[in-house]
Image: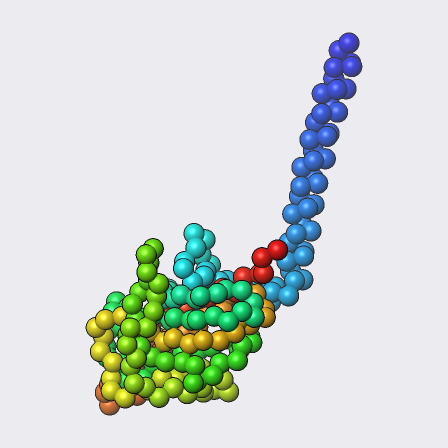
Length: 210
């Protein structure tokens, strides 16, 4: 009787160890799959941050202490769908008037951006009962620069640091899902034409719903 009970106890322990090893094996396979997946290069090179209306889990591309997250809204986060983008700059995001605003575009953001579909405007920030929208256009010249990897906005007159402003554009989302970091650089009026970093919008293109 004592030997049978001992054998049963050992059998349960061996089974538990086998299950644990199986779980570890599945975890290892999952990590191996991630390391060879199409988005591995982006995830392994730089950590990330989250989506439009910020989610509960946030990631970051940039680990520096100078990173500043900016608010944005997208009407669609699905690949290849037409979407309205609102890149928001609140009063707390800028300390001076803006003579020139530059927005860097990730090189792997494979979407066609037409300057004619972009405008600078005073924004009404959305919430539970209202949607983010342009309230009034701000006259400006808008161009693509750096081989299409930057949007440059030249207001006709410097934009003050009061009120919420933003850049609105309509595009078709890129095919590739993942996170894309757009950086905002602003040049203040003055003798020294230096653009300062305002912050970053980290958008997410999500997989299609099954």
